[in-house]
Amino acid sequence: MVHNLLLTLRHLEEMLHTNGVRHDLGKLEALLHPDFEEFGRSGARYGRSQIIAALQQENPLPEIHATQYTVSLLAEGVALLTYTSAHVDDLGNPYRETLRSSLWVWNGRSWQIRFHQGTPKTIE
Image (cartoon, rainbow, N blue to C red; front, side):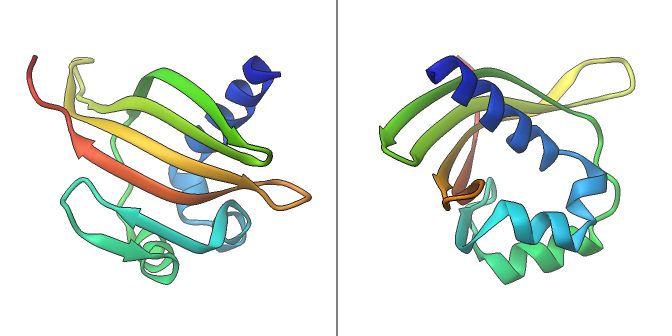
């Protein structure tokens, strides 16, 4: 069960990493919960309408590489997905590494992201 949930949420999260989904209003409205909030990597706080507007106008992103996915089922229909992401330059080198967490909720038909946070990864 948890393995299937991890695969499902990872797939949905990675859809949000693609320019095609980020520029598709219908897909964003389906994936982002009506009460969606984000605490961005910058430390800024965003609401759903702000994120949708920003993503619709965003220039194409460099490739995002995400690893170290884990999922925890917090309650029935509520899951926490965590992972590490980075952009990848033309030589294949990662940069802008970020620790990510997303709270996903089941709305009775599909999973929607309710909360997301990105925190810059410090050098260990």
